[in-house]
Image (cartoon, rainbow, N blue to C red; front, side, top):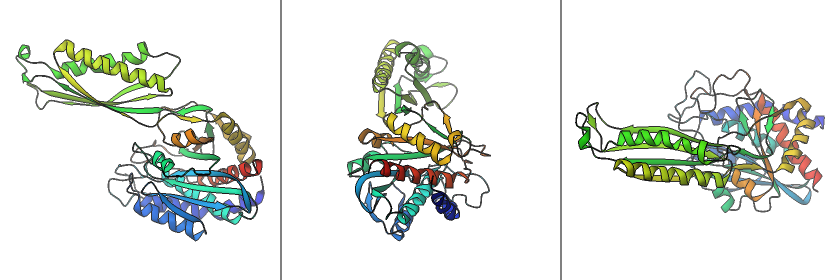
Length: 389
């Protein structure tokens, strides 16, 4: 790796921290990222980039090299979580009920950093770089699909993205060939029974009893209706019903999530869940309504791009930086980009000294990861364009 590139990254190391902390102080949730978008646009335009708005609050900036060639994109998600941040950090959230508790502030900083360095090198590479700043990753239907529909990938030949990852040591990089993150689906079930006095259950249709049966029975879908070699998760997150200890209520509501790596498995789980709900309610004399929302598709990395990204990681950061990891059941709408163009998504470790996981109100990141992640993204762009010129 060109030592001058490392020097350029070190020159902006403090700027990376300042960007990240500014975004951290001013988090904005899905499709409300007005200030975030304005700050990003100003920074990109100051670099001399042509910037257009997409997907409400998203941005697409492009940087042409010295001559025409292939086009590679980098993506950062820009939204925060609806979480009340806790802690005493100097850069704690100033927006009540919103926090960058997942690392998107860092994602924006490192893609801005890569843009800043690449603008200094535009007379030395062939091709074009596109920088995508995408809203609403945290909340389906998400911003990636809308970005794609509005032309974010027009002319793009390859795309790379990363997620800072608390469970990896700082500076370590994890990738998976093929499915890396899960297809998601969320459900709400409303069980309608017949209420009455708790001392006279024979006069009622108890929706709490029915709901309890549903929780237990639906868990059997994974163990008895799904190929054990194909991962699947069904989890209930809420159950609500009743007002007082001696009244059997009219209704109980349940909600939860389904995660798989295979769309056929996902369809099987959804179908069996519906069958169990219908038949169980019928057996007890109750009825039910099911609301099911399919979320993001599975994030499937292109094997050849993972090989390429692994080679660049070893060349840029060192052979020992790559860690073997397993796929995770979290969802990520970068999947929509990978459905359209070849690419790779990776986890970049920033967990040294960080006790709290993603989505925790005290989540934070080791900022020593910022320069190295910027270096890797910049190297991926330059190596891809050089290889494909």
